[in-house]
View 1 (cartoon, one colour):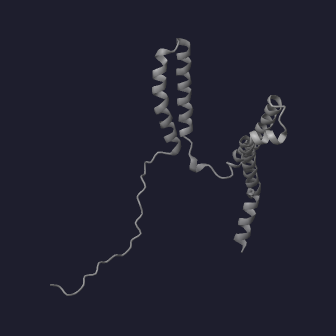
View 2 (view 1 turned 180 degrees about the horizontal axis):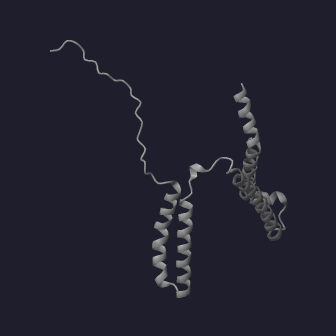
View 3 (view 1 turned 180 degrees about the vertical axis):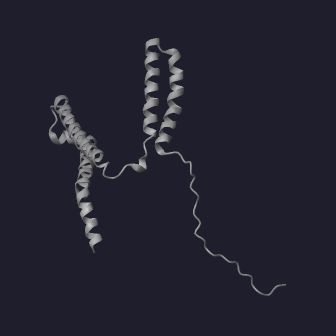
Amino acid sequence: MDSEPTTVNNATENLEFAEPDDSPKPLELLRDAEALLRRPTVATLVPILPLNLANKLQAASEVAEDSLEDLASIDIDGISDWELRSPRIRIGLSFVGFGALMILVLLLYLWGLHPELSAVQQIGLYWHEYVWFVCLGVAGMFILGREAMRPTQKQRKSKKRLILKR
């Protein structure tokens, strides 16, 4: 019998998981997933549709195939933060505009179909819609405010020069 205790060397090693080299890009996954749903649907619908409608459906499916192929060829990692500024501003403006438009439509709906209700009663009945549309507008304002506070390329370059001078 061995009287000396055995020690196990439990050196913690920093093991990293291997990343697959040929992992598909997100836009390629989107293209493939959409094609898995679209192709069988088109194949099922074409025999039962009238000829002119079936031809239009097949043409639209081919256009979708080409468009998604072009989309899958985009390198997401190559898009800089500065290039995404304009789309972010447009999204923010869309949120604000759509929220304001829907509040206006809701008010016109209430005034047109429920003129007997006071403003407080209208808000009491349709408060869910008011909250949704106001929150949509506020979310758009947050997006626009965030973009307004981001430094421009000139400001970034001047900061880099200051750091390099020190």
